[in-house]
Length: 167
Image (cartoon, rainbow, N blue to C red):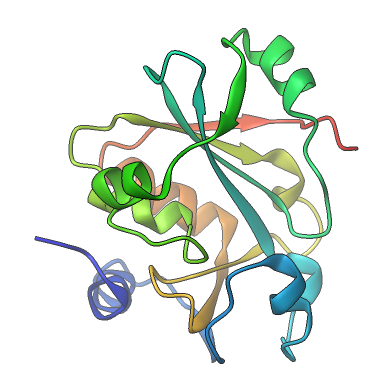
């Protein structure tokens, strides 16, 4: 079963996870998202779907929306092979997402847990809230980071918290 926006909202209700949702036009980049009026822009997330140079390991890295991740530093920190952006076809195959809709909630579609998830520890500070797509780039879902972690872990998805080096 493919988990889309409707299934995400149902799952949040089943787990008693409070949320706020902002519907907006489709956005494909952080620049496009910056033109949308959001209630909590300081909590918005940027999601990078990457793979190693041998295309053996896939990673979803979620950082604060206004940051740029130093991938070389991430590679050294996490002891990975060289990294680059993964293909749209692999994004669709593994997470059932299209470019522009990448989100940690897409991991719910990765039944074999091939994608390794890294979450910026900074989301736990301040409001403790995160803004992510509900597997659809026409909305932003605002939930507690702790609830997101709890939901993913309940589905057998490991969450690696890290302190990213920002450019």
